[in-house]
Length: 296
Image (tube, rainbow, N blue to C red):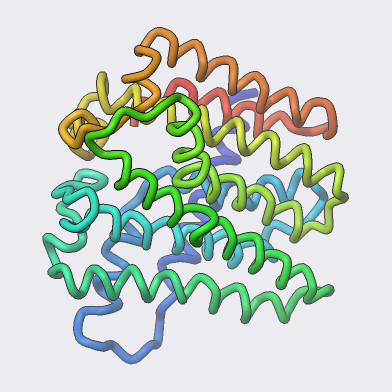
C-alpha cells in the first residue's frame, strides 16, 4: 500500500519540478535575476506545500492538472521566504539545502530582488490561470487565501514576531502564535487552495483547514527537534541555530521528549479531521505520518 502512496508522492513532486523548471522560459534576462530565482526555486526540497494543494484538490474531486500552476505559486512564495530568511538582516544563514544560500552566491541585493520577483511571480501565475477556470471567482478566492497567508496577517507577521522574540523568553502561547503565522499559515493556505480550486463545500474547507493547521504545527515542532538533534549533513543546513540566536522554541519550553509526544498527538488530530469527512483520505493521512518521522 505505502509503495503506491510513495509512487503518488513521487509523481506529484515530478509534476511540480517539471512545471517550476519552465516557469520563466523565454523571458528577457536581466543580469543574474532569473538565475538567482531558479537557483533557489529549483534546489529541491520536499515540495510539501504544492503537494498539499494538488492532493487536497484531488481529495475534493478537482482537476490536479488545473491546480498545478496554483500549487507552484505557493512554492514560489515559500522559496522567496527562504531567500529572505537567510539574509544577514534576518537569520544570516550560509547554508540551505546543502548549498550556499542565495546571497552567498549572488550577493545580498540580488537575493533580495530574486525573492521579490518570486513573490510577485506567484500572483502573476494565479492571475493568468485564474482566468482559465470554469468559475474565475475561484481564482480570486485562491489569491485572497494566499495573500492573507503570505502577508502581515500570516507568514510576514510571524517572521516579525520571530525576530522580536530573539534573546527573550516567550510563553508557550506566544511561540505557538508565532509558528502558526510563520510556518503554519502557508501550509494551511496551500491545503485550503486545493479545496477552493475543486469547489469544495464549507464543511470540506473546515475539515481541510483543521488538518493543515495540526499538520503545520506538528511540522514546526519536528523542525525544532531536528535543530537540536538533527544531522547537519542530512538536513543540508546548520543545526543549533535557534539556540545561538536565543530563540524560544517548543523544545526549549517543553523538552525533546514532550515535543515528540506532541508531534504524534497533532498528527493524529490532523488525520482524524479528514477521516470524519472524506472517504479517500489515505494519501494525506500517510503523508502526515511520513512528516512525523522525517530526518530533514
